[in-house]
Length: 70
Image (cartoon, rainbow, N blue to C red):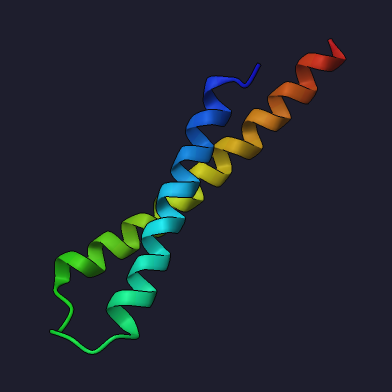
């Protein structure tokens, strides 16, 4: 059974990665209107969410290994 911390971590990683791919592909490489400050804040926020999600997955794995030893 997958634990909740690991599931939430993977959801954060997938959502942040999807937004980053969209932003880079559609907003940076395509011609269009100038980027607003809001879009840059969302881009930075998605990078932060990617880091938090990765930390969640790694911490869940560490906790799982620790519980197996006990």
